[in-house]
Amino acid sequence: MVTTSNFDVTGHEFVAEERRLTLFIDSNVEDNISEMVIPVNLINGNFTFMLNGEELLPLVRTGGDISFITAEFPGSGEHRLDIVGTTYLPEFAGAAMLVLAASIMCIVLLRNSQIMVR
Image (cartoon, rainbow, N blue to C red):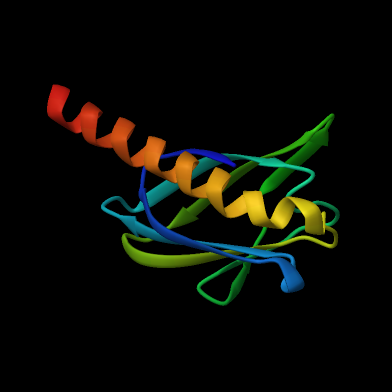
C-alpha cells in the first residue's frame, strides 16, 4: 500500500479475517486529503470506509492490480480510518504487514525530509 497525504500516518493495523486495514492519522490541518494505492491482492471488492466510526465516501477507482482511492475529510487532530474490503488473499496476509510497514516508513521518512528542507 502506498499513501500520499497532507497528514501523518502514525500507525496501522491489518486484520485479515475482517478484511480490514486501519490507518491511525495525526493531522495539523483542517482540510485533509489522501491518495491511497491498495493492491487488489491485499484487500479488494466493495470497500467501506469509516472515519472515526462514521462512513466516509471517497472516490475509488479499481483497475488492473490496484485500487486507487482519493479521500477528503475535515478536522485536525487524531483520526482512525478503517478500510474494509469484501475479499482478500490469505496467502498475501503474512507479507501484507511487511509491505504496509515499509510503505508507511517511506512516507514518514519522505515527510520528515520535506519538513527539514523547508
